[in-house]
Amino acid sequence: MTTALDSGPATRGQHVAAAVVVAAAAAAVVLAPRVAGDDGRLGAVLLLQVALAAGWARAMAPPGAPGAVVLAVAAAVAADLLVVGVEDPGPGVLLVVAGPALVVAVVHQMLRRPPRTDVVGSLGAVALLVASACALALLLLPGVPGEADSWAGSPLVVVAAGLAAGLLVDAVLPRPAIAEEASRGVPGLLAAVGAAVAVALLAGDAGTLVDALSGITTGVVLGLVAALAGTAASFLLADAGRRVPAVAGAAVEGLLPLAVCAPALLALAVV
Image (cartoon, rainbow, N blue to C red; front, side, top):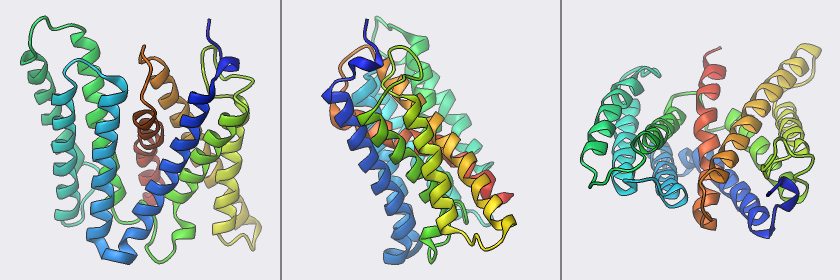
């Protein structure tokens, strides 16, 4: 039986590569407006959505994968255009895309060539991919990734720090394991929370006790969300039942948690 103690060089290397993907993705979203304004952020988010869809299809290889990629990318483009094109957009605009996309996902299953194996599993995989791609569009909402002139205080940077720290620690010390047959360990989870708290405190004004407590609270919440999202992505890859290509695995392990964390960033922005 494979356990976390058997995590080989391939898995450890994938964790390191995923940490690089997380850092590059966060930097692209936060810094793109400085280079090309709002269009730059739109391009950066769209690039992440396409990379997630392509990596997902290659890593998970669900039945009907090509159609799933086309549907996810189309839904992502529609979500992005709605977010940037609607005056005073809210998260509800994503339902305009996600709802019809799920209907199309059912039609996609009906159009698959027989024999249609694992219909339920394939439909669930497509639904998760579409939801994740649309969730990344939340990073285009004002205030969610942080202000363009204050990247150090970006909540997205806090999340990325937590994700990257957890991945790097798990690449070295995936023990004690969070669960059997997992390549993620308790030290990585603690490192994710600790890194998020440290970045939140460094980015904020901790001159008073109230400010310090606010920074700690923000870091703990976002760090826990990042740690759990990263762990879930790793479990998903482990459940693929096949050897996952390194590039595709790094894309999923790095970008899927960012999509999962996007609603938490939105909640923090509106509180």
